[in-house]
Image (cartoon, rainbow, N blue to C red; front, side, top):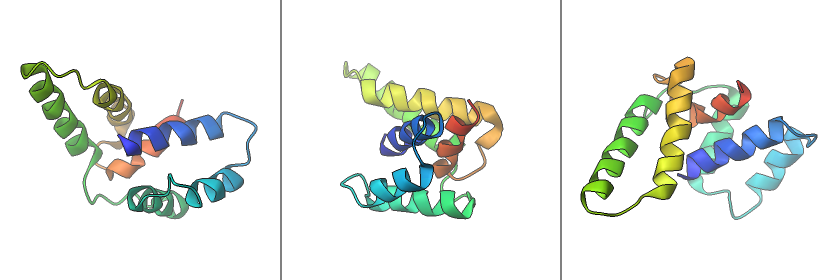
Length: 109
């Protein structure tokens, strides 16, 4: 979910008048800068999305979580939003990249 939210933030930065380098500097110095987000920022900077855990596997696993939630009467609304973001990235041909490549999906819109 955090990766999907970060991907949306990057998409917003890319579609706005904000300076991407300054935005990344702010993100990396904020509470948002978890180890996961730092890893995603490093992948973005290097433009290296060599798979550690692929987008298609992450998408599959979120789908499994959604199914499990539904079977137990638990609405996983945040997961549903993240699943849509990951599905869009897979549909754009990034399924075999690392899941952090979800940040590239926003650039293609």
